[in-house]
Length: 232
Ligand SMILES: *Cc1c(COP(=O)(O)O)cnc(C)c1O
Image 1 (spheres, helix red, strand yellow):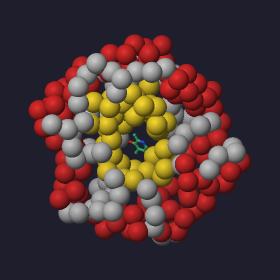
Image 2: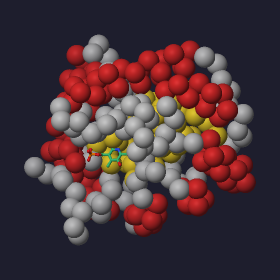
Image 3: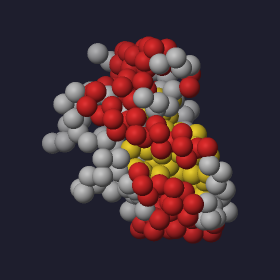
Image 4: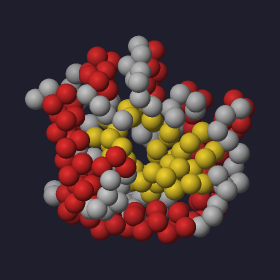
């Protein structure tokens, strides 16, 4: 299977999941998780019609960005962002998905203000309260949004999560549904600088399930590019 064929297949599966859930297929954004794929492969995915690209590592993003890899679609940062790398990501990534602490939010805010821009971010939710994972717990989200609303240079556009690894897609259904509830409940409240536009969840193994549960942005790597070779 080529990247082009894979993108077509993923899109068809997303469309079907949306229709089955009574939603508009065009509401669902397909982000290509491009880590470890070179500029040429990224361009093929864009050509084939992905809506967005997402990178995990700052260095890789800078390098591929300089090569023009992402031309044509918005670039998101989906990895774990270290505070000392914020400077390199603010302004380059149109959306930073994994904001997992108020301390990180504060650093992003300071950098954005300095540069005279407003950075869109998603708050990361540790939806299963896994000790090994960063992110806000579901209970912490209202207070985090409240706090975020007072930071300058930040606009919170929604929530993201990486649920526990699982054997079958439906195992994560309770977590996806919990995310949807958090997204909807907090979307009803009015905070400054917060607009619940994106619910980012679902990866290669479970994107259809995530859409069935309310995701409107799925992050897909392997199902588009094939398995990543970590030995290279
Ligand atoms: C790599 C990655 C993905 C895509 O994972 P696949 O299982 O390859 O689809 C999605 N989200 C994040 C945060 C990632 O790092």
